[in-house]
Image 1 (cartoon, rainbow, N blue to C red):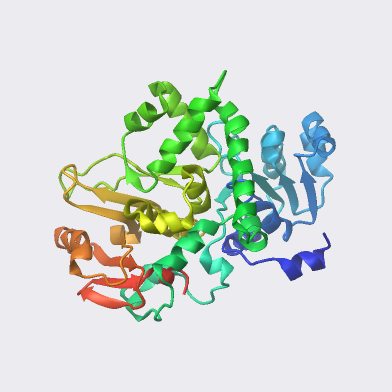
Image 2: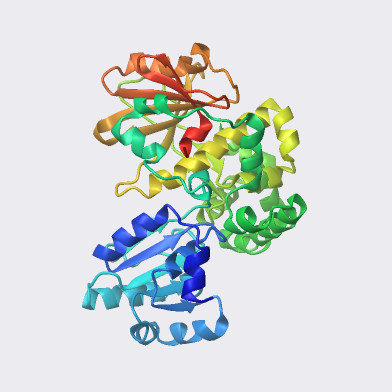
Length: 417
């Protein structure tokens, strides 16, 4: 593909801001994320040379002498699928130790460090996650992003424009997911189904090998389904391993594999010494909503009819929109959640801003939210009056409005409008 064609067809990504900033000041950056998320396409725009290590001929030289192979490349040099020759990390470390000039290397890979490889380049290679497309990117949103508004003036979200999106529109968008190839080039539902099934089979036949010797693909498939069934929910790992019929150590290895290939993630519970009896269990999400529905075998029209599936789908969809916005900040924020041990109070998503300021987010399928939909946020604001900045009820209706002094309701589409 010519450089001009790449520029003409490229859909700008949120990660572009972070990549340009990093390469202006630091020698190397590693982009990690799900396969098919667009990491290579984003990095290729900034590279003067490219080595694709998933091609056997190109990888050979990097396996034999990675230092020499890297030294010959024009900078910035893109090393695509670096995990095919993992010794390249050490070579990059040695080269930037010798010459710490900025903007030398971009590395892309589809395996999160920790399960398959160690990381020998701490302090030399900055890691940057890249996730699937968000609606902000698809719709080329201009101006401050949702998270940027939270950081500056959260209650300004009450001024968000009216939305013409209905719950059916959100479900349709969620069913398309965030893989660029699906969103931009595969509008047919059957074609998307074949694509997603191929993705899942790759997970079950190849990625499962990361779990160690002699994995059981059938039990791994059951574990994948158990994760999907519980996306956006708080369950202990015993529930997951019982559903899959696997031992404790196997379940732990399977979950590590699914996180390492960016299929799912554990969102930690927020803890505070100012609140008693908070649950410590994580909340799990499938990262892509199209994969979520495909693994469960649920169509978009079926999801709308089942309140439990609809609630989980919208929560998972909101998390998929927020995750990239949080990760591309100069100082990334983490999604967390909150629930007390009795289950009387729970907040879907909790963000801790600089200065330990708190923003709580609830996701509701209703088009007409009321004070009862914000009752957990109201409870939290009373418990933490000096650090609670805002509570936000994201809903499927058209309008933004205040529910209380520091609690508002706004359409889910305000995540990208």
